[in-house]
Image (cartoon, rainbow, N blue to C red; front, side, top):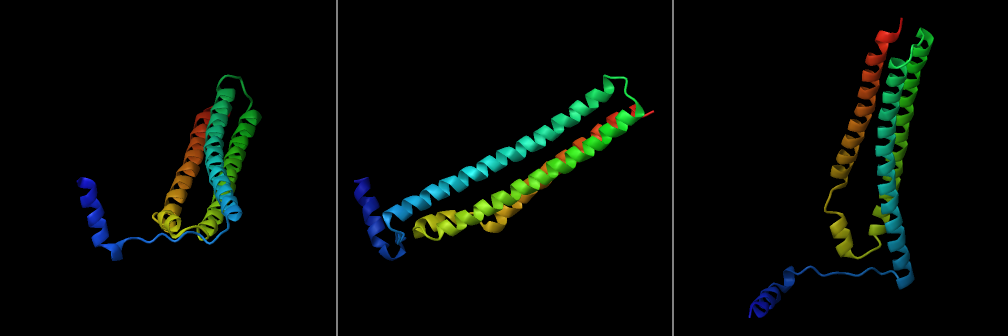
Length: 165
């Protein structure tokens, strides 16, 4: 009984029903687009993973640099070299984060182009999160990652400075 009531309710508002328009692609091109879409999504996930690893690796290097100064009887030249190395690690990590962020942007552009070739339903679902909102989320996270690296570098230098004689 409930099923017939639901069907009747949908039949009453036929003009409000969303009409799905399939893509105009042939089957082999459609399959190719789906594979390219999955590849782009995997590339984005891989790039995000590399970003987290770059940040974690930089922080781990800062810990190692601090430990190398604290656990050894280091000269002033060594301490200064370690401080310079920490700045190079920060610069390299931040550069890596920026490159990986750019790569994610390229992959998102590829996905956006592919979505225009698929059905109107897939385009509608993909468009639920606005482009600006996605960019705000991505760049907010990137900002915090960069701040994490710079903050860790600052604390490493603060912990090393007392050993510079």
